[in-house]
Image (cartoon, rainbow, N blue to C red; front, side, top):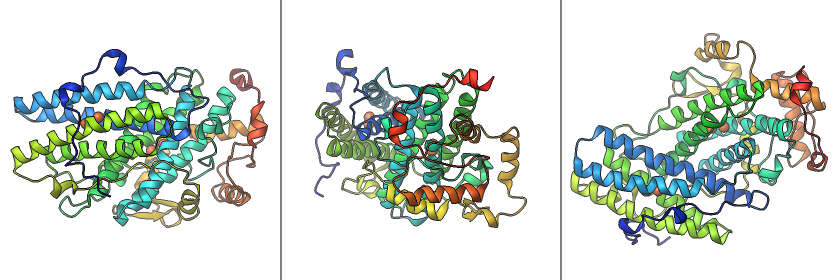
Length: 434
Ligand SMILES: [Fe+2]
Ligand SMILES: [Fe+2]
Ligand SMILES: [Fe+2]
Ligand SMILES: [Fe+2]
């Protein structure tokens, strides 16, 4: 690949200030948008939030007014980019529909990153998180059906399976166990650095979305499910950020942030079928090339270092969205019983010591049960089955085996075909619960 981001010319910073009309673009239509256009939109919003927030952190701990001035100038552009990207979401896309989009991002992005991650320990961590977000998608799909009567495939478009994975009630850990060994900044590849920051940004924004929207439903069980899964996303942020070498300097981190934005806009631009939205990715790639150049110049000026030592000289493709059913099924078959080990490693559920420190956390938070389990039982009561949207009978069989193994439910698992879902009535939950 010949594209060297450090050699490409971007849009000058003074031309990155746009009018409000240019900042706010027309939203996509939730009924005909490609599901991976929606995931790119959800995901790039997270990338921009991190780009903006990091520059605030930098300015708060670095006492130099010249640096603060340039940081604030770029930061404002990041913030305006965030507006453009996030405002592409349509007003009639419900919080739960958007939530399914967020978990589709988590599953299909993590699967892509994992298959393109050169560091085996980092890859193992990606796979571990993958099965947790995959289970969130299954839990939220039950709620989307109960609350709005929707077929989760209206959002997922058959690209991502909905299936039980490592049960969410088992995702709650002792915080110390979530911490991982960090990479060594001197030896880690640019790919590893970009992959981690990419996933971290997505997970952090998922947490923030649940934090800002989980209260917007009246149903207590759903409110509690958002609280529960939001807390798992907090664990995911802690886990992925702990993989980053904390001794990287602020200028080094700034460079990696801008490089991560460049790489992700580049991938979005290459993959986007919607020409109107593609032109936004193209425009913003050009903005980011300029940010990258500024970050590279700051590194040279303040640390007398060359950017190539840190990020290399070629583009990386960290966020290629495509169906990952096969890969996810492979991980699902092998790793559902995996748990965090006591030495920054991994263990399996049958090998955990009796005093495994996450048990204490689970006993506290699940003292009155786990809301993400309750919704599956609720579906069983209402419909006699939970929603499983998987491609083949083999996976459905797999669910049955998992169900037996974990014995977490009193109901028998079953499937609902997309056709059956089309004319489903909406439940009056309050009436059902009374
Ligand atoms: Fe940006
Ligand atoms: Fe998740
Ligand atoms: Fe997550
Ligand atoms: Fe940027």
